[in-house]
Each structure stands twice: as structure tokens, then as C-alpha cells.
Image 1 (spheres, chains in turn blue, green):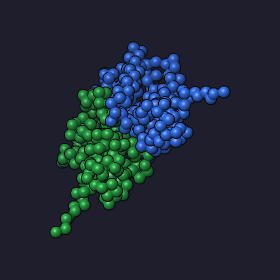
Image 2 (cartoon, rainbow over the protein chains, first blue to last red):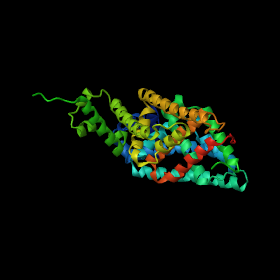
Image 3 (cartoon, helix red, strand yellow):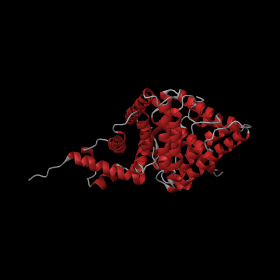
Image 4 (spheres, rainbow over the protein chains, first blue to last red):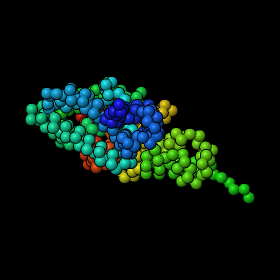
Length: 201
Length: 201
């Protein structure tokens, strides 16, 4: 009987191995040769599944986003407005251990993105979706009378995105400078500012 | 007459070339082979100047910090408190073209740091210095009665650091999502909050 190869499973295995290599040693450690070796492929056989290294890296990155996204979706299910926003902020900021490892994959991916136009556009799409979600929660919060700050929504979204990316980098690069308590307090203060009808802004 | 080799100049040249390679193609493009080739060294001759690739990368990173630091020092000379703080924020946030290119070097360095303990500690030292500067300006601002927010200084410093790192990544990775106007406004609002005696915090 001929051996049946599950190609989707093979792709998943390759991404598993790549994820692990990135977490251990960064983007430089995830060479095609090393990926093939760990996944038990002959050199060159990877090409049947992924044409370029970037496609594999992108797969690992998609998985990082998916992993965070799936966990988050369960948390915000049935929620809206300010409540959903606060849950998202606390969840996507790397203050919880369930997303550990993902920060390193994200950081490696960003480095790669900065020098690769295809990946760059892909990250742009993700950022768009991310911002759209925050904007929706803010709009609902304003409808519900919970969000009263005069600061415009695009600026609030920018604040959240920069805080999130900054925390992700700090945690991956210099964990001894990553203070979860302070970041939790930053989120609480941010949410409190959203509720305020008038600020210095 | 024997040729006199200026070894310091050679080191500078190697770092120049590495900086350029990183800006063009990221950390992966800055291989020892490529650095040697561009700097006009025989393969292996680099070792006389830098033992490991990480030492060269660190040199390029130090230069990125130095470049930003030197420019900034001129801007804040003779200033203190809130004025110095606002100048620093506007300057180190990547809203000005004089630090262009440096973001990419920083991002590559962070990626490298996340997987290398030696570099990591070095970045920790830099973060310490950076935070110490902000803390001093905040203390002076409180002495001068300009900074009145009840939010504790370490949290304010964290806010500034995360905003800064987040903006650096966004600008390098996805410039079309980098909105200098919004970020300038974020800084203005942040400074206004420092002046406020009571906030929701």
C-alpha cells in the first residue's frame, strides 16, 4: 500500500519547527537547512511545501497572531464597548503567560518585515484589522455613554497600539525591565481617562 | 616606509559598512562575509578587529544610540524639568528625519538582543540610563511646580519608554501606519497630563 502523505500536516510540522527555532535563537537560527534537519526533511525537500523562507516565517507569524487571536476571541465573546476594549488591552499586552514565546516570534517577524515589502504589506493588513477592532469598541463605548474623552478615537487607538508594541519588545528584549504591575496600572489609568468627559487634551 | 594602519579608523569603517548593510537588508544581510567584502578585508581578517559578529552589531547599535544621543544633548543643553522632558520626547520619538535609518538598526539590535544574553545586559544598561534621565527631568519638574500629576514617576517613565519603542517599531515595520501628527499630539496630551494636579489616575 502506498504511503499517504498528509501535506497539510507536513506544513504544520514545518511551522512548528520554525516557531521553536525562532523562540530558541531568533530569525538567524531559522535557516532553511536547520528547519529541514529538525523537521526530518532532506535538504531541498522543504521547497515542495514552501517556496521561500519568508513563506515559512510568515506561517510562524500567522500562528503567533492566531494563537493570541483565538484565546482573545473566547475572552471577549458576547462583550462590547469599554468592557471588550479593556479585556483586549489586558489580554494582548504581554502581561499573561499564555502568550509567552509569541513575543519573540513577533519581534523576529517585525525585524524581517522592516526589510521585506511583501511581509510588510501583510503586517499592514494585520494592523488595519487590529485598529478596526479597537475603533469599533470605542464607538460602542461612546454609544453606551461609557467613553466620554474628547481625545479623538484614532489617537486613542495609536496610544494603545504603541503601548502594546512597546511592551512586547521590552518583554522579549529586556525582561528585567518589564514590570507587569506598572503596565497593568497604565491600562487602568488609560481606561479611566476614556471615562473622563474632560481632560487637558 | 612601512604603511601605518589606523586601527581605530578600520574599526569605524567596519561599523560604517555594517550599519549600511543592516539599513539595507536587516540583521541577516550583515554576515561576516559580506561585511568583510564591503569593507575591503580578506575573509577572516575582520577577526583582528572584532572577535565575534555580535561585537560588530553592538558597535553599530552603539553608534545609533550615540548619534541620537549627541543630537539630543545639543537640544536639551541648559534646559531642565518639563521643558527638557518635552524636548527629549519629541526628539527621541522617531518624528524627525535626522534619526532616520537608526530605527532599523535599533529594531535589528532588539531582535538580536532577545536571543543573546550579553547584548541583552548591554541593552538593560542603556534602558537604565534612559529611565534615569526621564526620572531626573520629572523630579526637576516637580520641584519647579510644573509637574503636578499624582501618577507615580516610574509609571510615567514606563509610558514614555513604551510609546517610544512602539513608535520606533511602527515606523520601521509599517511606515504607512506611522502617523507623525497623531504621535506629536500624543506627546502634547501626555505633557498636558503631567501638568494636571488631578486625573482619573
